[in-house]
View 1: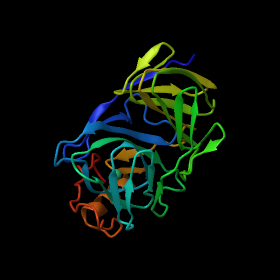
View 2 (view 1 turned 60 degrees about the vertical axis):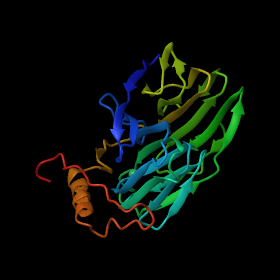
View 3 (view 1 turned 90 degrees about the vertical axis):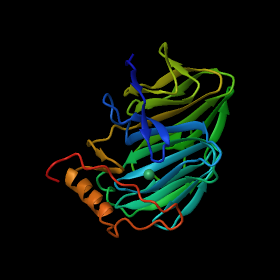
Length: 293
Ligand code: MN
């Protein structure tokens, strides 16, 4: 059986002290299919007067995929969208050529638990016009006491509504009392598991919320033992054909294009328009890591 790669998360600061646990990209494994970035925020109960407030920042070349578990978050972007996301819903922002957004707790002193994942766009979609979609209803079913929510792709005869440009799977699996389950997989997909609460045991190895289990390709099924109150994401996809470059909030295939986007952000270029409703402050990009660009 294919060995499982255990990837520890690291803390990342989204700004204003909002700390998340990031598992991809990692040194051991950069992507799972087109999924290229996995952040897990919370669960946290903010103190009175505190919340998540991520200032205006740009993206190119990717889709941001937000899965909300607890709390309420207001997304605002430079296309003029203003959308509250609530538990059980997905926001999908297709950055393409460029977009700017803010993300704020709707009210302070509340709970927050969310996953924010990035999807790399393929070369022919890298520069597409930006778009934003909100999906309040997703396919859900129960099987033997385990609850499944299909976030992305197709599974078991269900299809999630998110518009994607690569073959991907995102499946939320939740067990209240604990369960042993078997999942059907596609051998042409590589897969990974991200526990969001509780633990998952597979091939005799137990994974908790601070780590990611990379499962690789070539499996047609998977057996999982879930702890009580376990919740995890099964992510999969056909391995991405081209290595992507990721820098700050930009995804692309060459350094010059990413450096140009950063300069345009820094110079206030109209490629990255204003966000009217979010809290106003703009996040500053760290200095580019490459010389000669
Ligand atoms: Mn963002």
